[in-house]
Length: 220
Image 1 (cartoon, rainbow, N blue to C red):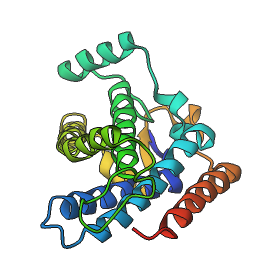
Image 2: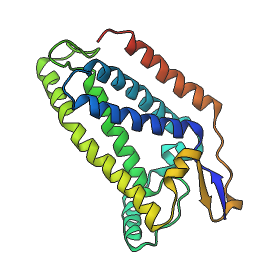
Image 3: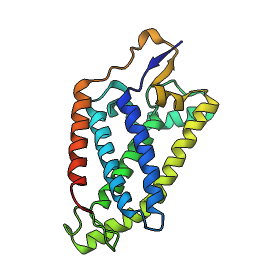
């Protein structure tokens, strides 16, 4: 039994950036409106982080790839039952339930920032694509943008509770692993420390920074 690096630095960096930006967006979005310009720019930053994570999920390191943690419904349900009984199978990367949460959060967050690009605060600030679609479509996306945060808060709470459940029930140090990248492998001889693909980092960060630079060049 030994600790093996599973999460490389791009995964950890993007994870914590998403957490920080989401927190800031909830605070500014549900506030009195005085920081709405900051809310717009933080939303742009979150969109870039998610774009980077999605690209890295395709061409990134082994355990960062979506193909590594997308499982069949049967496997997911089986793992849910195993978690309840305390006999869950060991997964070095995301387990089947964790994989579902990752995909769900990325999709929900993308819907959140994507809808924000087409709406305004109805006073001074406008998304870069405001006016590009019909008034009815803008109103529909606005309703999504204003109601989805409550669902996202619930999803994030479930994610945190699941992490704490693993920490307490299975003694699996997931929080620490997302800081230093290492997890305990009971059969370390069969596992190689994750390698960070240079091309994956370059492509994902270049695309994300290019998108962010364009967004930030547009007055809100």
